[in-house]
Length: 249
Image 1 (tube, rainbow, N blue to C red):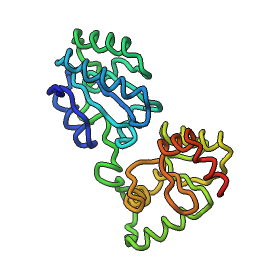
Image 2: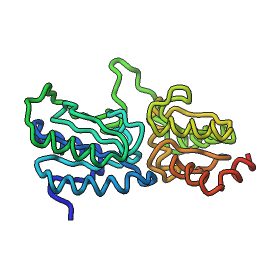
Image 3: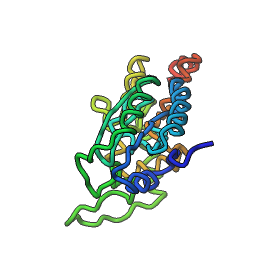
């Protein structure tokens, strides 16, 4: 049974609410992904640590689903662990180092030095996902795109080339670890692709989630249809299925 200090975060809003309750409290942020085998072991370690260190707020965060939180903490691999007091970074660990994580949590659970800084701003409150894109003062309001127009535009983007990656950033400068990994794998596989930076277009960013019934990015599009994300790409390479995909391009 999960302890009262352990929470599986389901939204940016929940994350903000939990973090803002006590800025003097030590927090452990555990970033994971279901496709990463080391995360399965470390998720159990994190739960045990929460039971033994009830003064520590433990937040389990699925990095791809809550990618804006992951990006705000520069998460490029999973598992990643971030220890905070309020908004002050105490320690950061990456990988399945159960002993190192246990030592760090116990160290900061026992000590209570004053926070180095305080702000009223939550650690991860990206304007785009909390309330849409921020308004630009003085900007001229343009005619709103209808859903049909948006879908048509997204379909056109999806058919720009045989393989299109809807990602955060551009191939030579990805803006999140998952996009970086996807680009690297496709290049290793010798796949030519074009890309679209969803951070430049909030309508496309939200619309692609709905159109493809796929909540995360990057999204890999093959011949105008959703192939999947990073986890599907890795799995298809492991099973050999991706060789068939490449042969059909």
